Length: 486
View (spheres, rainbow, N blue to C red):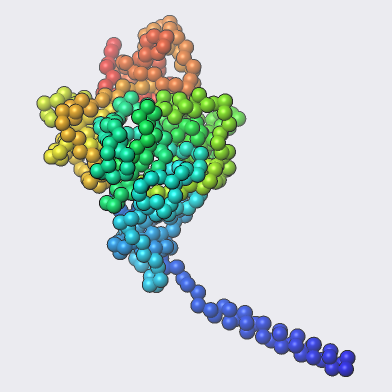
């Protein structure tokens, strides 16, 4: 009996061994769903934060890139795809479809603003809104990490009680020409026309809604110290020792980033971009941003610990925020050798600056007949005639400026000298002249004059006027606005 039982056990074991490969092969034979792809069919293709050219670029991919498709827009033009830096939208006309698209879900692009798609490691606006809200009241914030604040970028706009064009206005508010005022963002919504609205908190006035195209997002110093790039162009590197920058972003003058750390020798700073990319920059390529509302609030609360600690590689502390579609600011390309920027919308107004052909100017507004654009450049803000420019962007997003207020919008930006180390101010342009003051860096001072050869600039400091070598500072602004002396 014992022998028979042993034979049975051996037979069962043999059958199990014979059936195991068959079961494994059967499992492999089960049908597997293969995600369809879009292959980039142009030299470069912009992947955008929303389904349209009016949305900002998330990343630019090169020709031949394979992008897995996650959803198809209801217009059959824009497809939601996955990229190495997150989820975004591409125009299918510039791609070659590969695979079976019959099982890919469809998304209503007319209501896309109410649905948020993004990788949790690529944060943008951390206000903790309910992803499903499409209008009405904002959901209560779930995060105390304020990474972004809003600035008004039009001369006058209604602060409304609800995110609707016909909603009662709370007040009429306008752009702060000093660039100081920024406001907490406490809500977001999209109306029935697909227009995005942001709810902002204005001290002394209250909380209300403004259309997103009439606002500019700035980094909030209440999250971390904000730096501004003072070099014309500088590439981030992954490691300050190897100086390896492959795959890292390239930053331009005035771009804002968060400060994370500084190397012991003070040569490099560790920074985080607004969309969560962490890397290193040379210390002399950045300057601490000062003067905005959030900078002042951060200074007042310097003794308090931050609401959330930074976790390297996670794009910031606190709950992982999500990316929402963000409208792109239109711009003009100067299409003539030289173009006058005027103080008002007409040739009868004075020229405040002259820009060369190919210059790109941000569009802040347009007159009703479309003949003159209100623009921003290194000179400040002013007006240009549209026939000598090439428009880039979505015209419908440009605010229309009416009435006599248009003539008072132009603001000449005083050139400034930016420095990161201590400066010696001389009584005249030459080191053989006496020193009148010593200024500690980093900082910036208004430039009031320059020598004909451009080697010396005169600045206005708290200690009075003085001259510094131009090689010791970075002059930001239009050099044509600096008087030549000597």
